[in-house]
Image (cartoon, rainbow, N blue to C red; front, top):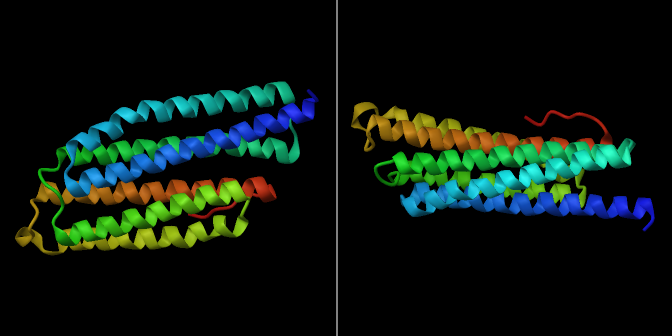
Length: 218
């Protein structure tokens, strides 16, 4: 097989591995959020256990990227694809870790969040889920505009997080939740906000592949 053809096949393999990992991470985030909103401890435990598989995929992608750099000595756009692929895998792995943090917090909550915090968390989770889909689509389709849209989407998530914290602590001792419950729900919002930050990093990686320039979408 011609060397260039073999290299192109390896780059396609890298993209497929990243998309598979991205899909698994997105599912873990969805399940972690559901475990919080439904107080589903069994679902939370599955998210925690699944993290080993996500970590394995991260290591596999890193090994593939290192092997491609060592054996193919890529330059220009090819090198950017590989370097950005490594960065993208790191962000996905950290998003998986944050899903685990959500699941572990679910195990510490004494009950599901009451109506208003639950509504705010659900809204944040839906916005973050849309960001993950948009970020992965931007990578697949080499879509610079989709990558840039992530900045505005992240601003909306940040805004919702601030509102969540304000709502949780505005009522003082008369709030329906205990102080510990309110703090744990605030942590959940923080984890979702951090996932949004990592998705904007994915957008930055896409722009780096396409333009060779380093962008700041946060």
